[in-house]
Image (cartoon, rainbow over all chains, first blue to last red; front, top):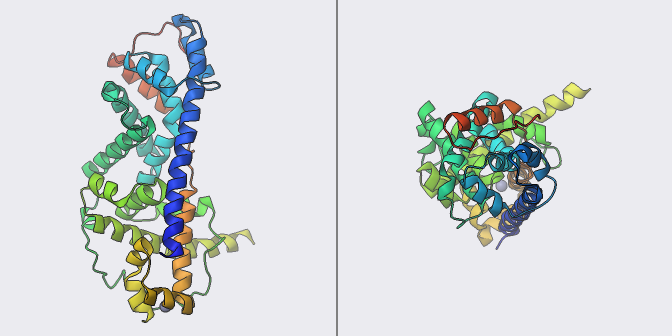
Length: 246
Length: 82
Ligand SMILES: [Zn+2]
């Protein structure tokens, strides 16, 4: 097995583990205070704020949210808003759309929360729901289906670049977060979605294929093209930024 | 194996690892090695993009209103002051 593959696999596993720990710690923190506060309704808003400092199992918040407890809804929002919003923003590349979609995702969450049975982690469940909200929106908007249905056959445009060796700079060590976010915004939507789902969010190709309604091969092919395109974009952005600093 | 052949199979090489021949090419060809390193680097950097973008407060305001309109929450007597 190549080193390449090993590091990739490990990284995905590490990331998911770290995420679970992070999420469960935050959740625990979010509710301890909630439960230890007096039950008075008047205390609720204060409770929500304080809820983020100490801990109770997230399961407790979820159960209370299922019963229509507004403070628990808000606690869930506070815990998960960044992750959901980041996903929406990166997938759409548009702030206004991302805000609307975040709102829609949480409204759906609240409508469906009674059906959450705890088979998966809550964050995983919410995240999946959010991805579906975004995909649904993009489909309505007319997500360029063509780009999702391309086959693995390389086209001339996507094939090996003849001038690939002409550029002797390598990217290593040169990308910062701002660069990468900017480059991602310039990706065609189909590429961007797969890149976000796989490389940022850590979904597997089979999961992406299922969500997108495309083949696993397409998902892999799109991801590769997305990374190649990003490489081109980053090579342009970087010298521009360097020049701008002088 | 030349660069074109190597790069044609690149998605598969990155996905499942290369054959002996492909790994040989990788060791001997700087161009393809740079390419593979760049693609790997991009994927690594992407994984470091933590989901910490903060939504505007108006997002929660909108949710709160709709929750009330749709009767999804029990009435709360004291509004939060944040
Ligand atoms: Zn080569």
